[in-house]
Amino acid sequence: MAAAVRAGAVSAESLTAAALRRLAAAEPSLSAFLTVDAAAALAAARAVDADVAAGRGGGALAGVPLAVKDNLCTAGLTTTAASAVLADHTPAYTATAVARAVAAGAVVLGKTNMDEFGMGSSTERSAFGPTANPWDTTRVPGGSSGGSAAAVAAGVTPVALGTDTGGSVRQPASFCGVTGYKPSYGRVSRHGLLAYASSLDTVGVLAGSVADAAVLAGVMAGGDGFDPTALDGPVPDLSVDLAAVDAAGPSPLAGLTVGIVSDERVAVDAAAAAAVEATAETLRGLGATTRPVSLPRLPAAVAAYYVLAPAEASANLARYDGLRYGSRGAAAGSTNVADLVAGTRGGRLGDETRRRILLGTFALSAGYHDALYGRAQAVRAAVAADYAAAWAAGVDVLLSAVAPAAAPRRGAGDAHPTAVYAADALTVPPSLAGLPAVAVPAGVDVATGGMPVGVQLVGPRGEDARVLRVGHAFQTIAGRYWTEKKRRPARIHR
Image (cartoon, rainbow, N blue to C red):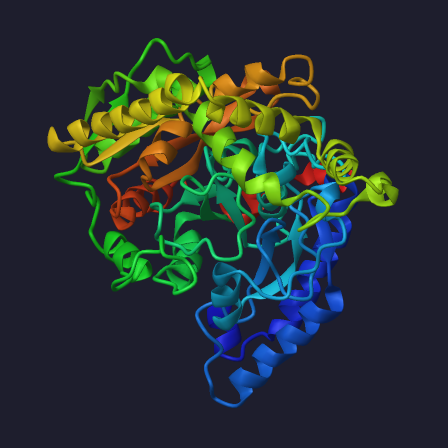
């Protein structure tokens, strides 16, 4: 798309208009978007066309329609994090990741639905209603970046921004049959991201392919004076690296060792296991060697995560009290400060968000800090050590399932919300260690009527190019690349 716009073969305005038509057709079935500003998108597209006409190039993403998760600030465009407490929030500035994409020529169509403040795995925990999976609207798209994943899967936009704290880009990518890339922690600035858990939050990409994800990620990456955790230094051109894979011949992964994560304590169903096995066979066919790898602290990672992330959330979300930030709702008439705060937080925050705030506050309370938070931090360090041992033993990347099964039916987790946490067993560990990971489609589950199943590739921190290189080889050279026609489910037209 960007190349065609830069060459003058197609206009950014026509691409944007087509995306808006597709959005209008799909949206009644999906509810993937919370805010759409068609007029602003068309105006931005015309500005890209003017740049191209004036010989200014248009940028790496010239005219490419982009969806943005609604926890990334956009100046002048409502940003709610899918919470009633921020229903009227319009930021005065734009998140660095979004600003860099726009500067490269991307055209923002609107903001996508999510689980409130990123707390959920199904995009059912939104104050503004759930999002449906384009493959089967009775099933969830995953979460918390479910709106962005659904937008890409439905062919509304070729790429979308999401955020990943414990799997919130990779799991919806798997459920919706698209690519989901979580960069190394610090590779992309978090400035302008409404925080859930600051030591874990990562801005990521949903896309139709690893190649497309690499273009958007390369534009966003780099140091940022507004975010001290953003890594300075040169940013490698991931697209050039992937082009080298294409030119490498039939064995582009020769000399690479892929570790197959093997742990009977983390159960996956037959379809997920078959996807991993088939992917391993394909990677061997591309020249890689494979061997089983055990991560001893893998089963403990979820328990540690659901202490650490809620603890950080309890601090980050304290600002939404009706005094500093947040819509007061029915509490607006309160004359007592305690009643105002309690009314705002109790009446405007959803059940799952309040549950995690309570869990986090308890973990940090006197008498429990060392027993819970301190031990969870120790487990986090042990998980990182397990990965370090794998790299030291000669493993280049790790392969596993993304989720234990394909997308469940909507409402399946309502009766036992905490039981849903266990499904994060394979996505949480890389997040705890700050590692890069990419989820790629690897098959379908016949038992669910053909719902997508994905696999996950994980590499050492900072080795994003290596992880993307393996994912790209799998998708393209192995003939597993899902074309636009294959990715777009016909059933959303019904």
